[in-house]
Image 1 (cartoon, helix red, strand yellow):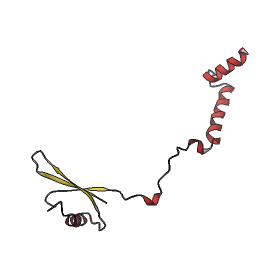
Image 2 (cartoon, helix red, strand yellow):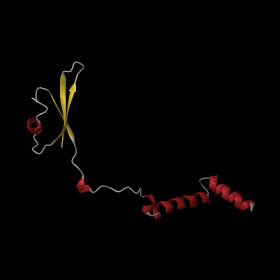
Image 3 (cartoon, helix red, strand yellow):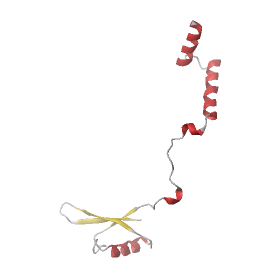
Length: 113
C-alpha cells in the first residue's frame, strides 16, 4: 500500500528526472492529449458574425473652419467632403466642432461612412 501511495505522490508532484522512462511516458501522454482531443473541448461557444453582413467602417475626416460655411447644412457638408475625399458614396454620421478655451472653432471632426 505504501508503495502505491509513493508512486501516486511521485506522479502527482512529478519528482522524476528528465532522463527516466517515466518522463518519456509523460511526454507521450501530453502529446496524445494534444493531438487526439476533439476540437469541441476547446471551443469557446461564441458565434462568429456572418462575414457579409458587417457594416462599413466609419472614418473621421478633419476639416478646418474655413472649409465649412455652415455645419448645420449637411447637404453642403456632404458635397465638400465628397470633393475632398474623391468618394461619391459618402454618408455623414456625425459632426463635432472642436473649440479652444475662448470659444474659437479650431476644426470640425466629421464621421463618415
